[in-house]
Amino acid sequence: MSRPAESNGLQVSWAAVLVIVYICSLPGFVMNFVPLLVSAMVASFDLSEQQSGFIASADMAGYTVGAVAAFFIIEKANWRQLTRYSLFLMMLANVISSQVDGFSALLVLRFLSGVGGGMMTAVMLSVIAQMCNPDAVYGLWFAVMSLITIVGMALFPEMLEKAGLGAAFFTLAAMLVVCLPFLNALPQGASNTRSKAIAPAGNKPAVLLILASVFVLTTGIGSSWAFLGQIGSAAGLSVEQVSYSIAASAAGDVIGGISAGSLALILGRILPISFSCAGLAAAMLFLMLDKPSYLLYTLCCFAFYGLWSFVLPYLLGALAELEQSGRALSLGSTAQGAGFMAGPFFASLLLYRGG
Image (cartoon, rainbow, N blue to C red; front, side, top):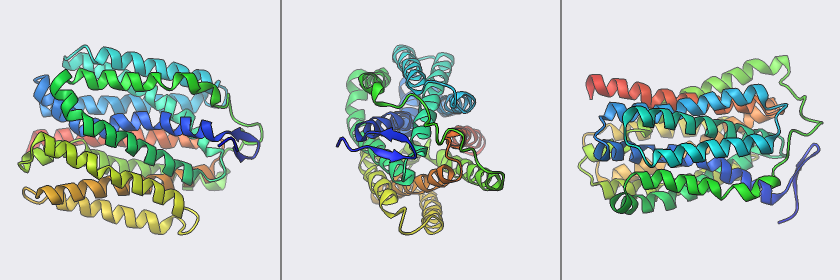
């Protein structure tokens, strides 16, 4: 496991790759928890569904701001230090979140946690962008994130019942602490040979098109995903059934991420992206059925997880290929955060108007 993953002068050990995908997974872990957190906030904190949706959007709004900030400083910043500061910001915001229950306080704290997550993810994506096969590493990232999510969501109902919603935020903070001893495995900055590899002028339209695609896709996913728990409740499923369905279907995330990494060099990108978008649309349509069954609900969750983690590695890999300095990947992270912010926000407005 000591053999490095090398790309044009940047030496990254396999241990560092595992640290990178774990760190990348933590903001996504929060995002995956959104359906259950929204339901829990409605039940535990006497917040409306609309307020809970806005809190979910605040996390993604902070994520977007953090990713944008990283875009401007990523070339000159010390990556280890920037990651360390981002981790501390996320840890502090989540520890305090575990102790409060008001709408305004949670709105601010989730925004600050998102800022740390956005900057941290942007740094990790910049490292991945300089590797030989970024699609495969992105796929590994989604697979690791889903494994963490499976464990977390399987334990969430009992944790909520025995310790309350604050325990979920405190657990996330503890998961961040685990990263600190391993930060020295990260490179301190971009390799000299690739730090100037800004996208050629001819590639910029393609970069902009991919960024727009990431934003539109994640907006659609986020609008449904944030309220997936409420959709299950409206179908007559219990909290335990919803939690276990989402946890079990997270196996699709593992399959999707691993498949993206395995097939990236075989199928190209157009066919997998087209297949994934069609499958996601079909899952959304089935969720629109009046009171879907427990089995159908679980299958739709499975498709959501699997295709979500299958398509995004291809889009991010295309960005890394077009622009190898890592700055476009920061914008890709921004587009993801903006989409997952916009999705719950507009869904909350629609929910308020029409249910």
